[in-house]
Image (cartoon, rainbow, N blue to C red; front, side):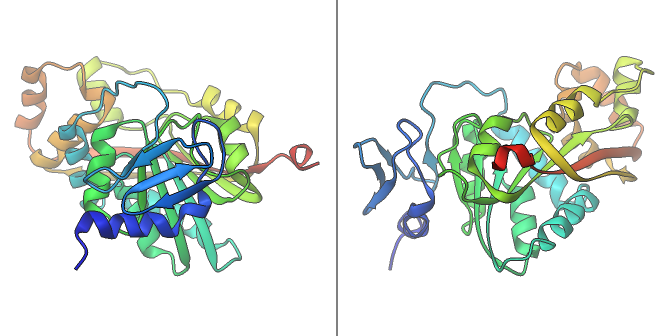
Length: 289
């Protein structure tokens, strides 16, 4: 019987034709038992937890294991379900039976796993993130998705073969997105809107000013033609443990003293506003000529 690592390696081997080398962009082959190797000899082994390390440079992510564990717990409560439901609906509109999906900034993989689970198509899914702790956790928890530590500005996939790129509350590299995306592919970007977690901003920072996503939206529209955009806004009640997880995973809570966090938790269940903009983009027509 194959070990868990060997099973993961076999799964990655079946997807070898999708990869290109992050160093030289050459095609890759898989050399059993554990090595992805390009035609120029650059080699990358499947790590023990079942992921690939495909960074070409050193990286120090500020996201630790505790953050990703908190993120997964909160996602499992359904806190983000209205947002992921809309992403799933957009993907289901794509008229083909087989899809290659990339989550650019996949974290610990929970969003991508939920999305893949709900799509009744043959899906080859990749989750890329620069944060090693998140990728390790993702590979541990989700066996039917390929996860890699990779730079979003240098993704290890061939040109023009990806159907859908998901980019949820994460930095983006639009030039690289355009490179790997099929001519009729879609980019689905989620950004925070004006009232996103406004209760935390007000409590921690006495911030009555509204957040503006205008510049982020402008940058997206410079790179892609907008096919659809909509705002998703709702409120959720979170108990103490869920609030603690939210504060652990959002940058809004990173610079707050433990005393002030404890004060918020002492108030018990809180109603939190979730407010997103979802933008679906396609390649500009001029880019296709």
